[in-house]
Length: 85
Image (cartoon, rainbow, N blue to C red; front, top):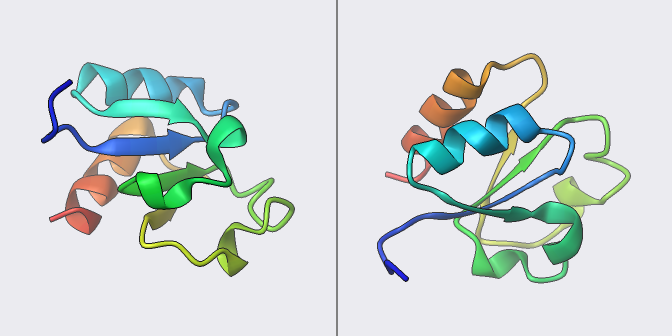
């Protein structure tokens, strides 16, 4: 596994964003399956619908949290690149 590859946890409902980020070389995992291990990720991407339900805003994590609401996969990607500089 390439240690330089950025790790991202993403909501399962964001399949189009997941697919795009994988094509761009990110290691993408399911947020729902990993929400108790968020410090293992560089970023967390949520749809906004479940953001409060999952407690993402209240979770203490070093990972950047990106709300993908109303964004295209390219816009999420661009924000991810800015946040992970």
